[in-house]
Length: 116
Length: 109
Image (cartoon, rainbow over the protein chains, first blue to last red):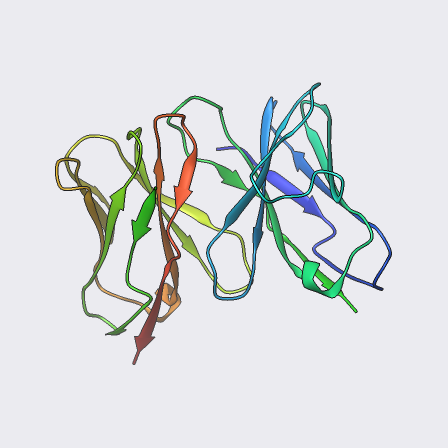
């Protein structure tokens, strides 16, 4: 399966600042990456689908101007949380999968964001 | 709407067997996945079913009935390390994954 890394694993930032989270596919060229958010004791919530070389597709209710996604290469996608607020504190997870195929998704280890 | 239902929490004893059920109502079906997620970690893949029947993989087995919109994950010879949340997810007609809220499994000695 694909190996996916995320950086940083944990980040604490002040309200109003921006935070960038990197997702790397280490052994697989991923045309599509997925960004999820998970609040405590809740299930994964898909935020957006990141497509290499094109604009990301955001799920309903996710602000694209607040959560900036860049997928500039086949191995790297970044999620930037702009002007972070305490309610953005969550567990952010990226995954790699073959869009349109019935294969499992390979998840990164996740990034714990705490906004103070 | 699309819906995945699974119990919120289950408790079982070390060495025993537990079955975690999942029912789904989705627009189309292109496979059902089970993932294990330990607290504070990302999900890891356990199983994939696209045809009816039982798929066995070591201590874990997964069953699917498409006509009933039903699946279960069976865990045998439970170990303390099996304490985790178990997520059921279905790929709909657009190949989008619809996630259940997860079942927290507590293993007691």
